[in-house]
View 1 (cartoon, rainbow, N blue to C red):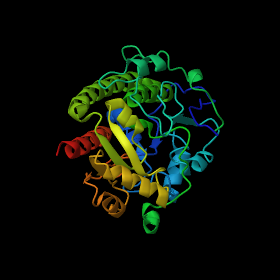
View 2 (spheres, rainbow, N blue to C red; view 1 turned 180 degrees about the horizontal axis):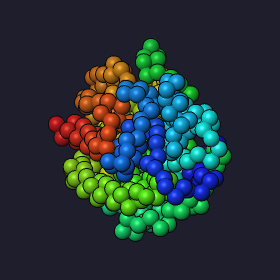
View 3 (tube, rainbow, N blue to C red; view 1 turned 90 degrees about the vertical axis):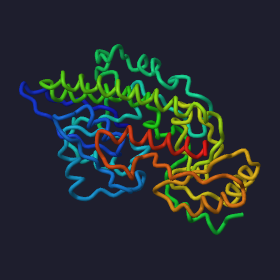
View 4 (cartoon, rainbow, N blue to C red; view 1 turned 90 degrees about the horizontal axis):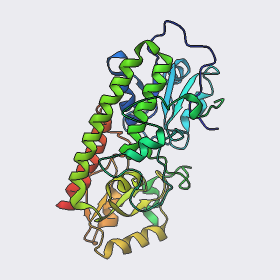
Length: 339
């Protein structure tokens, strides 16, 4: 079942109030917090350091989902544990699924090449797909979104394992800041529908956040310019959006899925790639034991970079977490490649 936006069946009351908003992962939480500003604080479900693909809601969190006025999430492809909780909400409750939202630029797993939709520093194609013009919201009517009822065998286990599927659409869509630009307006539009008295504030907050993100994007593009095309290896295949947006070269990953165990043949092939000397850096991740990365890099000449944090699981939640996530990733990658 697909979750995008479900319009309320009842008409919006004349005197609305700021809705209670629940979000799935830190970057989504940060974007919603920026749009809400001083009007309210969204709730983040994913605990610090937790696995976004395999998480169990506490009873209080399940109750928060059931009682919320709006849930903003990526979608079941990333956080399947939230899908069942959404089924407990009253019929007609508002849900904004960002993966399926109009204007979101999508990539398939394993897709290579630079992102032609969003060159670093500018996102006109994202905006055109979403119907943006000068931060306007006219084209974000809810009919547009659709409606729904709601040789290293012994190391294989080190990477962990779950049922996360590594095929089809890559759900790590927030790592393209062009998508975040689109989502800020979508979030503002949905909040304005639920809380029309504060619509002007949501729109102003969204516009300010988009301007700040555009400036950050330009800074990161400049920071990464010198390391474009220099091959790196990551722990798992989660960086296609980030790499395509900034022109980075990812030569492979230890694990295919976010928590899938790499087989012996895959590890041996990756070792051969590392031994060619073409790969300059290999990066662990904050949620996973770096031991396998260290063993893969040994004797290859590839440097071990700092731990990447694609979902922001180590960051302090809040409106600044999205910028911190992108900045930390760019600095970690550039720092290793330049060193």
